Image 1: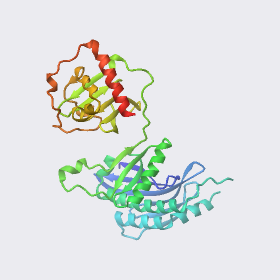
Image 2: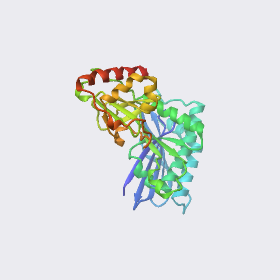
Image 3: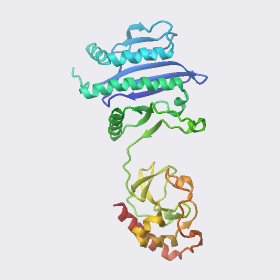
Image 4: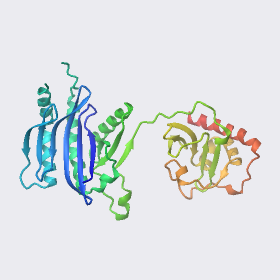
Length: 106
Length: 236
């Protein structure tokens, strides 16, 4: 399944959205949105929204990149609904997610 | 342990939140029209420019400029631009383009005679002077009306000039430049010789350029040198 990845610069300070699209027969079938911040010159993924596995979900990530908490999008949500859910959640909470991530620093 | 995580200003926090929402709009455009993926190279870093928020667009453009000044590559991507009504125009609809800083300079060595090329396109009334050899990728950057400098994109070096409205405007400001026609190759310029510009098809000069007789080769360098001096003066 062909995949395309872009980094969207959010503020020039190392905060980036990594977005990934998977296509099949010319249609987008899955996407992934990952909010990343830069710490000591290294990009670190903070939270990831993923439409894979047939149901959208959010993964809160640890310092080592592993998922430590998963939350599911409403059942039966299509790609567009999952995208709305993800963007609304991230726009409202990214500062808190970033601060929490920094507090989890080993 | 030191923490070098940048502290964001309130303005940067607001810009980040707006850009997250803008990214959502961009992704929605991709879902609706996956051909956008074919037109935007995989692995690109994007700076999004909203069509309907001039303040955010200006702030993001400013950011893109600073990113390129640091030597990083960024691609500008329009979001929310209306789709052309006419079906046949849609393939030409450009939403994204590379954004890079250019600091072109003239080569250190003087021009070599074998690289010198002068072409006058009477139909477009455009004069092109190549002082140095150029690579396959070039662009014409406006210096002032009617002068453009030709830049070799790979070497980031200037290599010549394009003069628009040559007979209709330029030689009125500097009549001595008319002598260049005596050494010019009189023919239509190809589209790729126009540095990304396509001039009017019928902007034509008032003379029949094809009827001019080329000057003897002994005079060629002298004439070109005089005109190039005029052009350098105009570009200053």
